[in-house]
Length: 263
Image: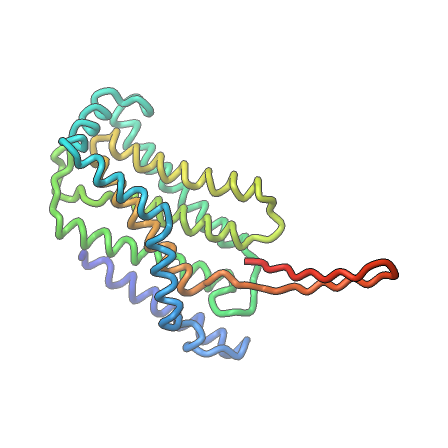
């Protein structure tokens, strides 16, 4: 793990402490309210494992490992550059697309209305999501050091997993979770936003392959890692609230009772 991760973690801890202190004075919450219970950690882990964004890319890692497909696809992508036209364009595009996923994460976090629960104010939500991103970065850095895989272009031994892919994935997944918490959006708009974020993340991953910086297995595993970390952190600290609304209608002709659940 790189030494730069320690200051980032310390900054995150200070931010959490500050948020908790503000919450205690303004809303009657304590630091304990901000920390998930064991049951929530367990459920968050289950959600992260069962997410298609985690297990589908992992299956893909296994598939491309068959009969050297990983290397063959990488060589074909670099030679033909079918999407971006050149390895230089692909490398630049991977940076732009990853930045777009960061904007999506921050923008959607700011669009979620404030609430009175822990982590439900905009500054707190941003602190939490930045924490998830840094956790993903640390995990990626550790895996790079352990695997020590050479990049396709031979630049260094930091190929597995792809940092660009894992970062774009964690950003996109957090943005999708945020979209689910924005009221007033139709199902169509939610689908449009979430699909757009996933396309940006997928574009980032493929651009790294086409640039010759990563093998397909690198970006597939990075995508799975980012998705897992995002869901694990988000669902542990900000589980979907279930609210029950009871509607009772009385008239001379009929009595109707409906119960609506919002997740």
